[in-house]
Image (tube, rainbow, N blue to C red; front, top):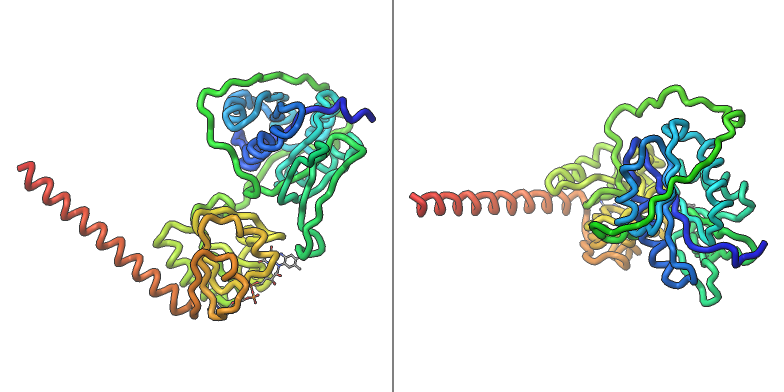
Length: 352
Ligand SMILES: Cc1cc2nc3c(=O)[nH]c(=O)nc-3n(C[C@H](O)[C@H](O)[C@H](O)COP(=O)(O)OP(=O)(O)OC[C@H]3O[C@@H](n4cnc5c(N)ncnc54)[C@H](O)[C@@H]3O)c2cc1C
């Protein structure tokens, strides 16, 4: 294998029902940052689906220099074999030195298959990517239950492939009107190998919440106690337009669904405000929330490790602190409403 034949970075731009997933845009941001330290600075997005041409500009405005489009009715619904065939063909033809996938359910299914077809390794769930002085990709991920960070390299094979969870990397601000190349990529699918036929996709009933998209999270740990006790968190969340999430302790206890779990085996979140209520701050939890912009921890143990990552710490019983906080916020909102209606009266009186 001649390593120098491999150039540039390829990002899998996942879309579902014609909507680009945030993680693909985040990876384009990361790829643009990494490409600055590579000889070939080209970032290419790969977009698969049916009737998806309208999504290319969004990818360009978030960092892609080129977008390879594979637009086929067979790619309308995700099919592991079809998607793996297409991506392996793209990698073999494009020869990128790095390929990045989002560690979504789809990405986790697809990336290992593609890596094995193109005989490359794959580092899953990376939390940090860097280019070393000798232009290798350093792929860092938690190992041994999160107690150790392992940096993995792939010195003898190309491409260097990795998956990254949603919310870990930052997307670039949208560059309105940015131009880039849109290239239709032709692939002949071998349909005889497609053994699974998706007849229908049935969406899970009820409102599924994506905590990685929330701007404010009120998160509860074992200290909250029973499921009914989450009411104090819900009350605060309702008042400030937040979503309730939790530590694994509450998911294991059956009090919260897994899609609300923050942490290494849950979701990585980066909200503007993260309330950690009755959460001790175990390394596996902190790994999923430490990038939040402002962390408020409420814990009755002043030595709880969560306070070392918090911007604001309140030592106290959450069952006492949260209702007081919620009441104060209600009062503050009411006073703001009163003030603005008073201003309106003044304005109207003056106008008259
Ligand atoms: C491989 C692996 C993966 C893991 N993945 C995850 C993960 O993704 N997410 C995750 O969260 N964990 C994960 N864990 C589990 C993790 O190690 C911890 O066990 C877990 O995070 C503890 O949850 P907790 O902080 O809610 O509970 P605890 O550690 O029991 O802490 C409860 C806290 O509540 C405080 N408290 C109690 N009562 C009150 C009160 N009334 N008011 C205020 N404070 C109170 C206590 O002082 C304590 O600090 C993982 C573990 C392993 C081994």
